[in-house]
Image (cartoon, rainbow, N blue to C red):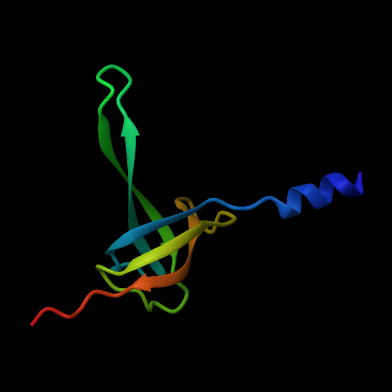
Length: 94
């Protein structure tokens, strides 16, 4: 029985890399993840984008940042992701 509990806790959580599209909410950012999926009929790769609401505890991520998000326990109705790290911050536009 203890091995089943250990196996469950070791299970890795899903992680995605995406771009912050909105930071208007308090402690929340909207991250857009782009993936390519093959169309079943035409056998052509189609761009699929999904928007996730992720927890940003310190309100430190801004629009345009590339971030890594990981699955987390539900924090609210739509927030099940947590921002893990900043990958890239774009240069400021002058």
